[in-house]
Amino acid sequence: MRSAIVTGGLRGLGRAMTLGLLRSGHRVLAVGHIGGDILETVLAAGDMADRLHCMAIDLTDPAACDGVVAECRHRFGGPDILVNNAGLTFTYIDPDRFTNGPRKFWTLPDAVVQNVMDINYVAADRLARRVAPVMIAAGWGRIVNVTTKLSTMNMLGAIPYGSSKAALEMATEVWAKEIAGTDVTVNIVNPGAGANTPGMSQVMRDWSATGKAPRLVEPEDMVPPLLFVVSPDADQVNGYRFDANTWDAALPPIEAARQTAIPAGFELHAPRDPWAVA
Image (cartoon, rainbow, N blue to C red; front, side):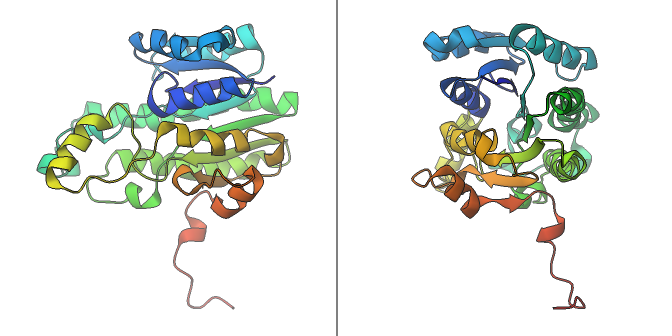
């Protein structure tokens, strides 16, 4: 039985992944920033709640990140798994973007930009640096990051969300290279498209009024690729991205992973060098 930390684990994608890990037998420390989400998460866990502990904390506080790791070690051991899912999205940065169009980067307040970078990248970096030595010493570990589509990172109006996720995307590539050979892996699990999370409810109403509402990825769709990357079947899988919207749950997990895996980072997605030797 492994222990996991899931940030943003009390609602939306994070709650689905928390419950998925519990159902597969793991112990989970679920972290969020809204205390009211704790009761709903515990109730959703039902008879699995004895393997669940929830915390409402401020991930922008380095001491709070220390406390999360210490609490996991105290209650459950490990941590064996870290899921960096917490994130501030467009519904925080620019709630009117889908009706009024995206804001220009120079109109954004300093506090908004700082908060997005602190939650989406810096907190993930802090936690990864704290758990990596524990995992390496134990001889097993999984760091799983949630970034976003590359086309979302660089679309108009993506600042600072896209910047923060691009930082985490590149960090995933580098961390995976540096941790290789330690029996610890670093991978990405993404929705691969817009997700049906609480913050998207108003967005969908706005989109529906225009007749352009897209099909959303359900939070539960994140669970199959997540369970694969934290399983023994993925011991040699390091430095890849798996998108839930292209994961075929009808296939054995290894086959679904083979069809879905894309290297993390940007280098392999750049246009081919026309002077490269074929």
